[in-house]
Amino acid sequence: MNRREFLKSWAAGIAAAAAPLGPAGCKKTPSGPPVAHRHIDSSACIGCGECVTICPMGAIVSEGGETWIEPDECAECGTCSRTRICPVEAIRPGVLSWPRTLREVFSNPLAPHKATGVPGRGTEGIKTNDVTNRYQEGFVGVFVELGRPALGTRFRDVERVVKVFRARGYALLPENPVCGLIEDPATGALKPEVLGEKAVSVLLEFLVPESAVPDLEGLLEEAARGVETVFSVSAALRAEPDGSSPFRRLFGPDAFLLPAGKVNVGLAAGIPGCKEG
Image (cartoon, rainbow, N blue to C red):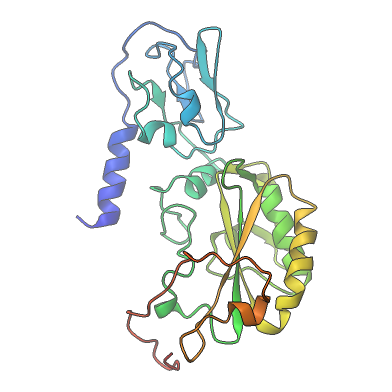
């Protein structure tokens, strides 16, 4: 069994429903058809409220001895189930359908994204650049991560950032999973039905020439004015021929440089037809 198969098996075991235990103490879960979202089983819950603080989206509410998950605020990340915080295992996964399935594939680190096969947010970012060569010499990979560390993001905010970049001539990298949600490539508009969906975080990837770096600040300020969440920005850069970072050359002395940023050490096999270095 490889690592990915093991993780999927492990996740399935965690999500398995336990036999009902204890008295009802939660807002009742509708009976009958399968529930279309993650929920708390009222026949098992004891109303202790231990699960409230574990939710990164603040979607679990406990009031008056009742505990429930607010469906619209839940990002289907599965944190409440994976941590096993519930003493009676009353938290149940829902039977998700489109477009709610987007919440899980962008938020649950154990859920492979169907478009890319990569667990979590569906992209490997710079980690595999030694073999993919997505971020080439003379270009800067721009990563815009919406939603973290705490607020999460709606896809209407994702659309806003994509549109701002697209208006300046920069499209998402085709390998990015958000590409599959774009309805109008000319403007970057997403499919209308996904705009209200929520994710813990969404990572957007763009490739811009080094000559465009001076314009990035204004571009990002424009994007920030239109979103209702937080986002962070990082850059993927190839090392200079002498092994040094081009960060200061491109972004100047005042830009924030995180010393513990990711470094691709170049141990992978070279890319046929590409210059070494």
